[in-house]
Every structure is written in structure tokens, then in C-alpha cells.
Image 1 (cartoon, one colour):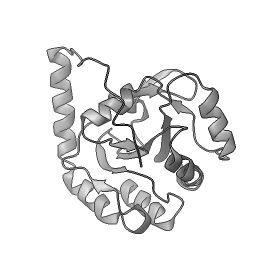
Image 2 (cartoon, rainbow, N blue to C red):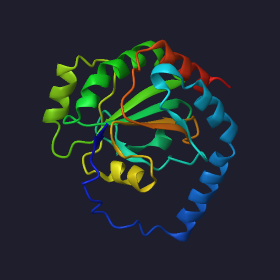
Image 3 (cartoon, rainbow, N blue to C red):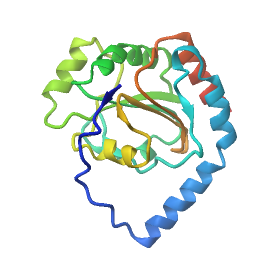
Image 4 (cartoon, rainbow, N blue to C red):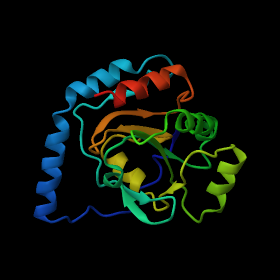
Length: 202
């Protein structure tokens, strides 16, 4: 993967209200009860996706924010009801360029009401470079999700989930982190398809 550890977190800590803290605690507690599912998904991560690690414990990612393909602000919670493979990428990340067509293929083959690959571009600046990148790599099945302030990456870094790019998170129907990976993988492989099937199984 490509490290962006040198990029500092310029954001201050969120001064959330006590009420928000209680809600977050309840969400994390509900997610922590999914440890068995996380372990089973972790065990299904073999071969090309063996670097995917079970979340220990699973935690809530419902408040992670970025922009939807139509440009409107959204959070992970807006995709409740489907399993997400949430991938952060940037145009200057060579491993991201290598794995993007595979993510596109996985979405084409496995995307449904139950599963979606949500690839979020985290370049700062405007849309010119990211859109050119997607055109150059032949991506046609992935939605154009975007977060250009580094807030999303820094939030994951703060949680110990992001060391560099790409970073991939498997998030369940309730917005709970089930497994995570730093670095690229061959997402167009049978190993990846088997992982998705295991993840969306009841």
C-alpha cells in the first residue's frame, strides 16, 4: 500500500454532545455482539483476500461521511440493509490503480440489493483527476463516491484502521465493521467472490 502517514490530521476532535456519545456507544455495543460473524468472515478470507482481518471487536461505522455519486452528502447509515465493501483510493496511489478494475468487476458480478462495492476517492481538489483516472482504468460499474478533505481517511487512521492506501472495510447491513484490510487485493478472484458470499449469508 501507499502510506500517507505524513499527512497530518488538521481536524480538531469532534466536540459531540453527550447524547451523540450515548448513541455511538449503543451502536458499538450492538456491533460488538457480531464477533462470531466477524470471525467466520475472517476465516473465509483466504488466498487472494487472506490479508482481510476480522474486526476485533466489530464497531459501528454508521457515521462515516462522504459524498454520494450525485454529489449529495451521505453516511454509511444511508446504505443500511446491504453489505458494503468500502474501499478508499486516490489517483496518486499505484496499488489503487492496479486493483480498481478488479473492484469494478466484483461490483459487476456481485453487486445487488444485498451487496455493493463503495469505492470512495479521497483526492483533495476537484473532480478532474479522479474522473480521468476512472476513465483510464476502464471503470464503468462503480459509483463515483468522493471525500476530498481527508476527514474520512483521518477518522479511519484515528481508529487504527487506515495505515495508507488503499484501505478496504467490510461493513454489514447495520453499519458494523466486520473485517478490514490495508493494501490491495485481487478482488476479481473466486476467493473474493467466496468471501462476499460468506459475508452476505445469514
